[in-house]
Length: 251
Image (cartoon, rainbow, N blue to C red):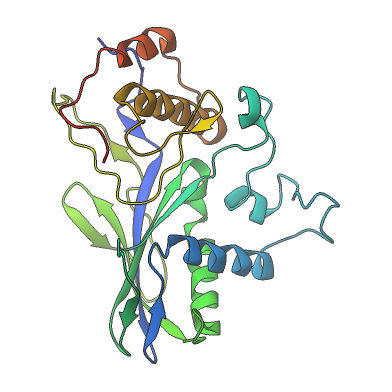
């Protein structure tokens, strides 16, 4: 029974950037937050169309910075999510628990997932990352040049740069027609989930808590960034999470 009426094609695309550093540089563990800061500052410096920042630091909805990086207040979302809507991108970096060292001339790769209308801003996002990496990143202020840009397809990664230009390409993902009855979930990066206003610690997080949060996040993303919000039987779906049992839960 399909309690969450997802379409067969979702407006989501995953891209992989490959940069080459001029000299050796070092990144900290969980470098996605570092890269997010680099991305945000570069967006402010290059694409923000505001004459001056507002007193509360909020950018209007028609500012490209707001559209990509800082989604504004959305009264269609429930509760506190109105003030903290989901962003239309996710930055994914190699999972490392120690410092990451990249020699000169090596490949530094990271991925970015774009959701909804943000997919159509890929040329601007590419230009922003190129600006940031040419200016210099990390504490060493190392300059890097863009080597490749790829999109993930059912057949693997496909290069999409043609003489520096991004041509038309598939930018949706297709859901499978059949889903397995058993799944395995690994939490590789820090995760914060609150239950009854308390942050769940290791050993406290249950399958139901995790799945309920996933349902809320998917609904918020669709409401904020997809052309059509989801129309699912959410109460039935939430009740169904109580029936899910795992052999081992999130250590």
